[in-house]
Length: 231
Figure 1 (cartoon, rainbow, N blue to C red):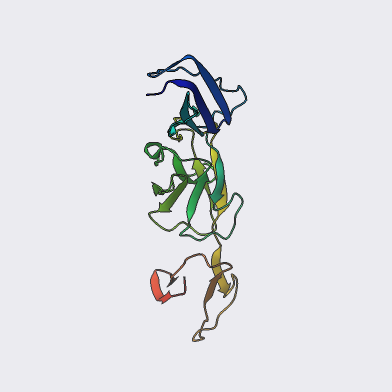
Figure 2: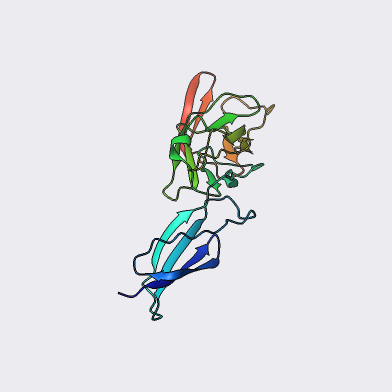
């Protein structure tokens, strides 16, 4: 057996560098302590830090590297990268696609109806939604149990009870306020006069494709017709 006279530690990932420790006198069986200081300006964002250690004996032979990976402590709060529908969107479908994308993987136990809400705005009632964190860990999707009302403003919000996997919460609520598409009469218009026995052509429409697949017409208390439409 040859004695070890040098130990090298190589750092990569969150920190890059090299620490070389001489062993004097050389020892055949060695437990060597190597110290390095984490720079003060390294972001506390949970980034991976890879440590690779080798030893060299007195003949110059280098051992196979032993590598471990640790992580910097994550102290940074998550951020919301995007929300769908976007804040200020109009003409949104009454069966909307509600989605939020975060900057880092989130804690699935905190992504629920307490932290993800949909309300009619301003100051309206809560809308029942089903909330799910997708497999990528950063995308939250929500779906409504029933179609929304037409031409109504809604508020899709993410609360501060939502945390990342290190327990860091959103620093403030993030919300998107959107309005569903309008739907109404094209003809006849209010105030039109009709003659007894005359056929009345009724036309309704929405400006945008907002997910309506059936329209029911009523005169007084009777149903005149139920018409299927293209969603």
